[in-house]
Structures are given as C-alpha cells and as structure tokens.
Image (cartoon, rainbow, N blue to C red; front, side, top):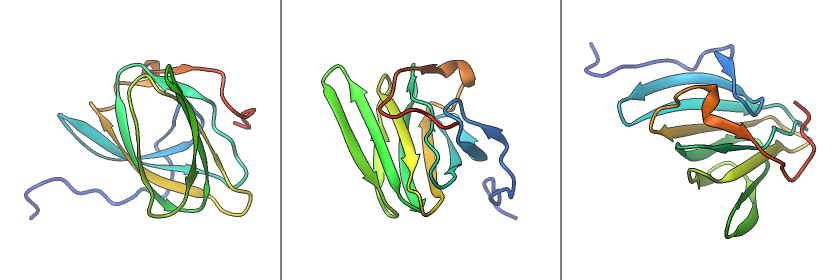
Length: 130
C-alpha cells in the first residue's frame, strides 16, 4: 500500500482551464497542485494573467510557443519536449500549439489552484482559437 497518494492520468479532461486548454487533474498537497494540460494542434489559448499563483511547466510532447509579458517587457518561448519554464504570479501569458502535433505539459501551481476566478483575461499576442 502506498504511503502517499497516486493517480493515473485520466483519459478524459476533468475541466477546461480558463485559457481553454484541457486539464487532467493529478494530485495536490497544501503547498501546490499538479495537472496535465493539452492543447490540440493549431489551437491558440486565450491570454490570461494569474492573480496570485505561480506555475512551473514541463513540456512533455508536441511543440508550440508561449508569450509572456509583465511590467519589465515581454518574450516568446519555444515550447519543446524537455523544456521546463516558470510563470510568475502577475505575468500575462498565452500559448499555442504547432500545426503538426498536440502540445502536452504538466504543471505545478503554487499555491494550489483556487478556481477560475484566479485567472483574468488579458490582450495576448495572437487571436485565440478557443
């Protein structure tokens, strides 16, 4: 019997994120939560800014681009398998999947995701398709 919790990746999404990506919930503890995100090929998520949570993303499969912006400037990050990146609280961000493959990532949210009111919609880099 495991000492901690376990959960297999669900076949179907548990919810849609405010940005429109599919979310499969994994596990949560007092300090953070983990989820699997999927964006279908050629899709562009809505741009959001998290009010108080920080995230660490790890790209599992596919390819794409993430735009991030804050008071200090903006950047675009190529999303490829093996890349790990952070999204600090208060950072505007938007991501899109390449035309050829679905984009899949796992992310840790600190503190745990409090609910959809955490994300506020912002003007992004690209027109969203979701």
